[in-house]
Structure formats: structure tokens, C-alpha cells
Length: 431
Figure: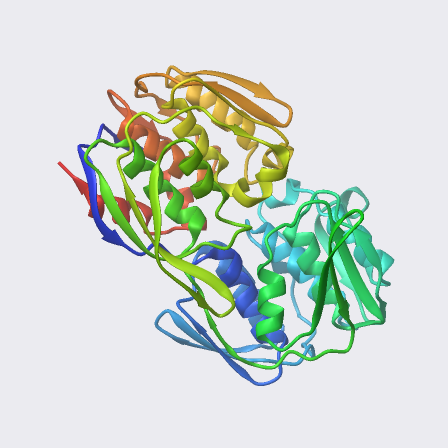
């Protein structure tokens, strides 16, 4: 357990850990490429290590040099694993690697921890079956463990109804070894790190707007060429510090090297709509991704806001901390179209509403979101993290803004994405 009380102010400069989505993809793409890739500022966390260890089990050679990695690619030619591959708590690892393993002519099995074994996999399993891979598992392949025997694949056209970046990525990775073209259509553009990184590794993509939405298409048989990849700071990790600075009187922070990809910076844009003082400084492009230093300061009373379904993909991971900001804003805020929150590391809709109510906030739960009526002050409370890193971090920030004592029941779960979260937090708090 961790006890927190109201902070005085937040001041200073920091660099939060590198982006988790890009760190996962950097090691996977490097392993798939021909030649040796150099990955700079790689995030080492429980989730990303699950991916790296899985690749090592498939015969990939990795040399670590501090926060940098040298990875000798296998050009899609892996070694059959002699044991079950463990994705731990990482949905990205499980779903993207199901796409990779579907290209391999051998038998493999992916499992995960208790939480991941409850998360839906059919969204990836079904289209991979359509491409010609054999996959099976619990609940007809919807739940891990899932076994795979891949090999000869054919490209398909798939409508990605939920605009899931993990589904899109899995199919594009499988499509690189499929006959013909693989096409993914999504109603709203999801995170586009896979497309950007594929281009950085020399893959040609076709991207256009179609009748049903955004179309991404690639031709099978293309090779990835080894390259250097820089992993910028994670906007999801930065969001907690941004929220604290915006809401805590007298605060001022500079957060370095933050990824500001338009498919990922929805939280910062939404805070600006609420009246927050957030600026992108030193905006530049590195490894195909837009990066900036974020200057943030206390912004006074913010106003209520609505998050529409089409806005959700660009801020899906930040919705728990956005809920905390909403709780301290003037008026009634709403989030709709975020049913995906129900199947994250916890049921985040329920977790957010339950914890906000414990802190004295009037909050209503919808099937696909929530409604929050802003209050003047939060009250310290006992917080249930449900073992979810984003809930733990969001409500730790709430605890630093609340009157009285707040108790976090499982602070260790932050290690999934941000092992040094509390240390970094301590470094910018005054008084």
C-alpha cells in the first residue's frame, strides 16, 4: 500500500520513459528485418520485456547497451520454440506476435497472466484464420492460451470495426509473408506507429481514404531492411505529470522528447479545449514520428468537456487520468464510445467510476463510458487499482490533489509500463 497526501506544487524538467507501443514494435520489426538494427532509448518494462523475451525464445540475438539494443534480424525465419511463450500482461505482445507466428511453418503456443487470459483474442484470431493460419485456443480461440501453426498465407481485405491498432498491426505483419495484397480498412484511423515504422524499415504501403474509412494496404513478399529506431517519450506516461501540473496551483513542468503523433495526442488536445496551458516546443520528426518538448503550467479552473466516439482512439489509455481532470473541472463532462475500456487490464470504466465516487465525486457509469460532475475538491480515499497500472497512476495523481489521505492498494502494478513512476513523481514535487 502507498499513502499520499496533498502536494504543494510540481516544478522542474523530466523525461518520462519511452513509448510502450513504439518500443514493442521496434524490437519486433528489428527481429523481422534483414541485418542488424539499433534501437535507441528503448523502454524496459514488464510488457516490453515480454515481447523481447519471446523474440529471444524464437532465436533472435539481442545485445543490450544501457537503454539501447542491437538486434540481429532473422528475416522472418525463426526457430521453433521448445516451450510455451508467455506474453505476461501484454495484449500488444500477444496480438502482434500471433500475427508474426502465423507466418511460421511450425507449432507455437502463446499464453499470458491471469488478466491477459481473460482478454479477447478472436478479433485477431479470426482474420488470421481467414489468411490461412491454423489457430485454436480456449473459447474457440477467443482466450489464451492460443496455439498457432502458420505457413502459407493469402492476403485478405479486413474491416477493422473497432479501429484496433493491435489487430491492424498483426494483419500487416502477417501480410508481409502472404500471397498478394493484405488490406485493412478502419472507420477511424487508429494508432499509426506500425505504418510509420514499416516505412522506416523500407516497406511500401498504400494509404488512402475509402468509402468505409481509412485504407492501409501492402503487398506480400516485401523485406524489412535493418535500420536505427529512436523511441520517444510515452505520451501516456507524460499525461499523469501534465494533469498534475495543470491542476496543482503554482506548478510548471517541461517534459522532454514526448511523442505527439496525431493518433496519440488526443489527451493534450482535449486538455487545451478545457482551457489548459500546454505548449509543444522544439517540434521535430525522429524515426518518422513527430516529437516535442511539452511546456505545461497551472491553468486555473478548467471547463467540462465531451469526448466523442471518434476521438476515443487517440486518447484511449489516457481516459482514466482525463476522468480525474474532469472531476476537478467546472460542469458535467462525458465520455462516449469507449467500450474498449471494459477489456483493458481491468474494467477501467467501472474502476474510474468506483474510485471517483470514493473521492466524493458524482459519477455515472455507461456501457461505453461515463459522466462526471466536477467538484471543488477531491476527498482522500482508499483506492482500488484492480492491478491496473493506469488506474494506479491516475489515482495517485488524484491523491496528490485531494484533501486528506489517499491510500493506493497496489502501487507495484505501475511497473507494467512505468517502473520508476513514483521516483520521478517525487523528483518534481515541492513541499
